[in-house]
Length: 403
Ligand code: CS2
Image (cartoon, rainbow, N blue to C red; front, top):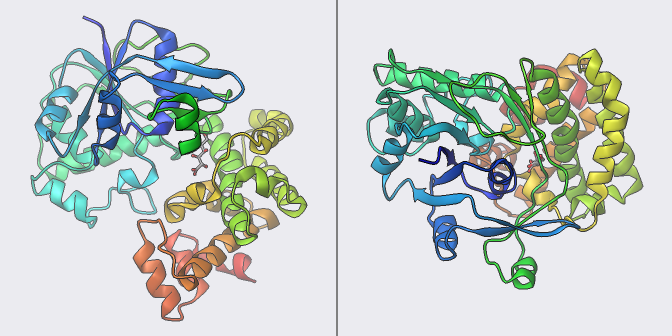
């Protein structure tokens, strides 16, 4: 039987990263799980689960390593059965930052309504509820691998599952699961109708030629022979390099760029002030990294600049601006804290987020953020910037950010 990966959260990113790498490795299949809507399943099923990966400048690569997609709300029991299936050796996860339902200090948010419902025994609906309840009945070892942009992504996922299991009084004594940390990277914009029409593929995914993956060498069983993947004991230095330099700069550009009237990353990069601020932010973030990462930082800044400059990517600033309360803590605030506040470009990034929240509410646009309602209440009731900073765990940096 062909060994399988069960991938939870089959968005464009997973289809441009884990699924692409796994196709290159050969010998494995991937079964997808959509936690909410049937859209991706319906689209992929209509074409036999194959789709095109439009790699900028390199044409369309046909991906055919997916064998099925389950839609969790339609069949939660089938998803739980897959999590427990002995032929599934890896359960990978890309559900975006907010899919973890954590508090700003990375603990499972027991007040979150979906987590509360999962604990009450309905569903489940969240990745945490599914993993805890599925692993509890699994009999063989398994690797649970987070592929999301979160610091210590494997550790925080494991901690959330353990907390859930304890709260739900699940017996986890027989569970043999490992949760490696990983750093994932590939810029993957939303698909446009133009690309769908050009390729004749409604499920096509646009991405850049660059891809990077560093995974903690901590697997419970077999894994595909993924090409170019770095397996290491120490992922954190890589994770911090990527999250703080690439994603930190992305978030600053998203808010400052939108406020300046730009639509795409490459537009904002063509704005001399924002370009200088982007490179300055990367330089500030680099000062918080390990000596090895500091050494390669200048070349990394240039490589990131070139990736951001790519005019063919059409990477929308508003897409990156989503879910700021979930992203800013480890993309920008951690660096700022490490530098004791002495970092004008990072400060500009946080101030741009505040300005963006206020401008969106003033314009009557709905913020895309799990804390959108709280942000709206603060802004419309004349609340302070300090109150907004509290939402990203940065109230004690108000002095340096707002001075
Ligand atoms: C972006 C990321 O949307 C965002 O927040 O910063 O998705 C970014 O493109 C990827 O992490 C690149 O690997």
